[in-house]
Length: 268
Image (cartoon, rainbow, N blue to C red):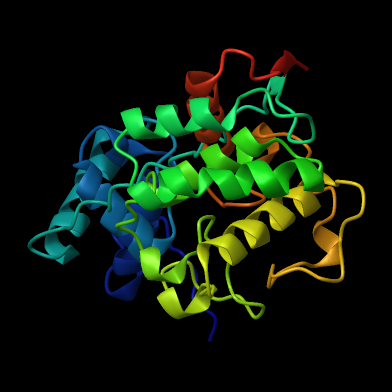
């Protein structure tokens, strides 16, 4: 037998119960409880029934029934809605507005570069290694001072203290052919001498800069991949290419301008 909703207040039994339930649902649907129950109670009832308050409208009798129903059936402690975690947006650094060439003639003498390094607490080996940069870089078509300053950034002026130490004789963080994690010392190339290590770093920088004659067949650079040719012709462009650090290039440029006022930097 189909059950009907009897509107006669004198009716008894299940009809009265159903009429009360309808009154409660209607009261909630039109938003009576928005002004008569706590937000936690409203949230609990919304989750339990799927009904949502819309506006503070309705009659007092329906409101009282709805309030009584919630108070009788809601948990003793109605949990408040979980706070929303604010989203954070990571702002990428703006694209570089300057261009400092890697391919060019050196603007600094080896002696001036050594004095610059000495004044900044460089190790004896780092100061002595300048001779290799001023030998290999001109032949590769890149600026010796750029490669030397890059080595200062990578090795903390030859004092190291990071993942690898001076025994690797690796002045630019070059990894083995297979690569590996930045934090893994074994992923980095160990060279047999500083001369070999510097030549590998200069060759890798020349490859990045797109120097003529690169990639070359005979090089100690373990990651001399043709796909890297011309990846960055500027110091600024070494950020997020040579290294993942978005400030890598600007850090090198900062040191470079402290070495020479003639950094060849120009606006883009």
